[in-house]
Image 1 (tube, one colour):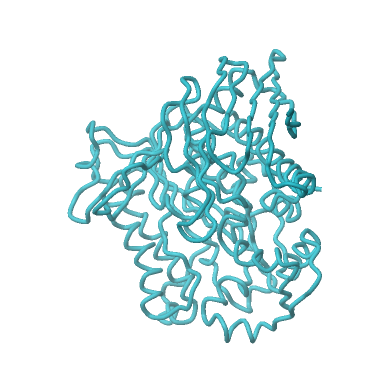
Image 2 (cartoon, one colour; image 1 turned 135 degrees about the vertical axis):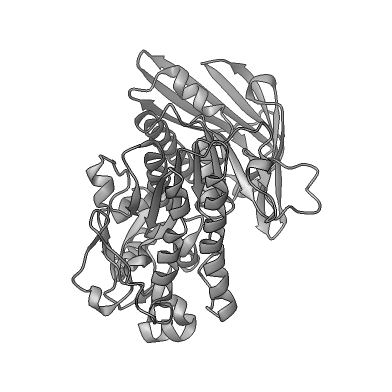
Length: 482
């Protein structure tokens, strides 16, 4: 009996991208992670071989905690600069075959993703096939957008002197996205980790080398070949979400300030210090005050935190932490390292941060509305990755850099846009007073934060934003393109 397979096909043309560049990008370490949509929690648990030698990949789709669906895919039918195919060995489908086809148009190229699949669910097969086709459309539109954006970014922003990169804070929301973004761009990435587990899993897959550093050790002593790194990216910092007890606030401070001070001391003492350090900070440094109503904070001016204010730690804790955080990089600057203090706004990505918490309700067709006219300076996660690359490669950029969109919005605009995109049916109205009573001091620096800033230095240095308006940024990361 013949089994009629479902077929899904999508094609895109890549202007100004030679075939070899497009093909090679897909076979680099980190391509799978980079192409996996943030709303899909699918990840690699182990792999054998590679795309060009019949390798296989073990995947997992978490359902609850460590419980999830295992999926094994084998690479076949590899023809360099033409095609390769992924075939399911074990998993959700009774048949799954994904053809990656590449086409040459001189200085341009094209990509076709063709999937043949079958699912055994009896009379409901037609319904679920239509649902799956819609999901595949969202997924592969996202994949093609990412491919175009990343290849273009690495063509635009490059520095021949930078190849080896050390990342501190690679486990977080931003760091976990940054690693595959860099490795698919041809960089060699290493992860700086503080606590070495007693027992590592037997089968563990990672796209970057691990470097464990005990507090009593120097970074130089942990480098195998006695060399160094061309660039260091410091994203370390404990998640600020949660009730701000004394212990939590100490963790927020120590994970940022003490860690950065220790890292910079280590970098300054290396035989070959890195050329550049991109170190995280936040626009919270500008302060969160009612006096901000008519202020727009620019990074091209001579802004200074009033460190003479003895009550700063009590009155505006985040401003105090950020000022100390940036001051901790002075030892690196004094050692001749170019330092960029990346003052990020609210980072919008469905894989983490405040958006991940909000969309739990949005998926239930419910929206939270807070009647509050505070300003949010935001940045899409993918533009933030590009900003990090831009600052790392551009020798003329140093000091504080506002990593925010050119278009700040008020919080109500954010919730209204989410209502529009998700087509929510019910609004839950919550007052700022209720938010404060539920979340405490933390709410002042997240949901109720009121800081309007502009990316003056990025604009002056010619950075191009991809997702500069709120709707396109949200639709991209949520997979809800029109």
